Length: 174
Image (tube, rainbow, N blue to C red; front, side, top):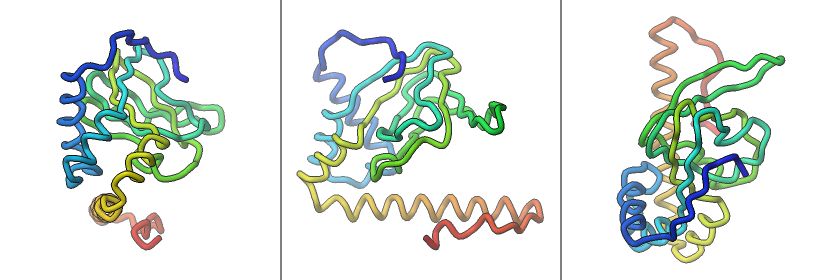
């Protein structure tokens, strides 16, 4: 695992309630029934990273999603021996939704730019929750479909604004 600061405190009811409220704000979970959200809130863990720690590394198995609660994390990609900084994420950013649905390796690294705390949901735990609530699967698929469509619309608008019409389109066609 990553070099996170361990939190020896036991899981408390107030933390569970906080997790529940936080998950309700994430696009992937926002329309799920309360019972399913409660299970997900219980299955999440909190991890804290010091500035400079890797939350995940490029090439590692991608098996968890993160909701940043505090701090700032920088997304970087190593290419031809050079590390390129792509963007920063902050509180309330949800990263890694696709990792919950299948095995793949990370395309990027995420490094804590400041001390950072995240809510973590592992794929295995997510699947266990889905098994208890199979009726939520169509809601999750719709949330992902909506998100992909919105991101592609944003990409198209950006390309049109810059007169750039390369073939970086069609993700919603997959």
